[in-house]
Amino acid sequence: MVMLNLETAEMSNKPYSLIKSVFLLWWIFLIQPIQANETPYLPLTDFGDNPGALTSFYLPLTEDLDTSDSANSSLIVLLHGCIQDGVELANKSGLTALALEHHFAVLVPQQSYDNNVKRCFNWFASQDTQLDSGEILSIKNMILATQAKLGIKHVYVIGLSAGGAMASAALVNYPDLFQRGAVIAGLPYPCADNLIKAISCMKRGPAQSAEELAQFAQAVHPQQKSWPSLSIWTGDSDTVVDANNAQMLASQWQILTQSGAKPEVNTQSGYSISRWKDPQNNTVIELVTLKNFGHGIAVNPDIKNGGVESDFLLKAPISSVTEIIKLWGL
Image (tube, rainbow, N blue to C red; front, side):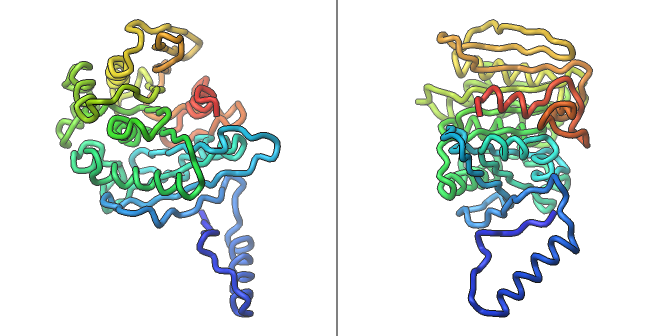
């Protein structure tokens, strides 16, 4: 995908600059035809300390001429899974199309092969997940820089698989940074602090109890009274990350948010949704369990902006991204 950095493109009166610009545009549009689903993500290069050695791209806010919708000041952070390109995931899941339609920005941190041979975020390495360290600090700094650049007020995070585990870590470490979060085929934090524990957690769920997971989060922020609401997605046939992880994450968050102990369960064809609510009857946690569904994010190509099938983008009766955006009111 060709990415044109509009922020660093220099405007000049020099003739050679004009010729160079015209040639560049000719090369982009004629030599490298842009596909319909390609979008103007820009590299985010100046975001302060980067101890995790990550790169990042962002989709700026698009102007809404009809309304002053609050989504104009919202940012969704997308954390990809292993072996994935984050911008490609945003495009194929439907998130990019939804951002352009609903006028919110998207930030896509990208893992490298140098950090992890499968380009997984290192969610199982304490040096990358502890408060203000490694990759988690890089992601935080990217978010703060994008907020400042675009005038963003509200931040949300969506993570898939390893990105879902990193999203869990981000929500525990920086609860005041996020309005809400979504963990798809991911794991609770801290599920593991080394590779052996990570494999065990993926296959069986965390060794800790829900109470111990919640106590860890409370120890990070002893004075924290309010935690972001959370949408959790799992497949009952996921053989990569066992569905028990989703249930344990919901239980951890139920303790942190002090929501009702018993969820309301709504069963539909092909999936069920469990919802935990606060005393004001607001949904604080939702757990979506997809029937006969493996490891990945749910897409529904039959609906608008429902995404397309690909590796780890699996067809389902509903689309994860469209449902999450609807839940968040963006």
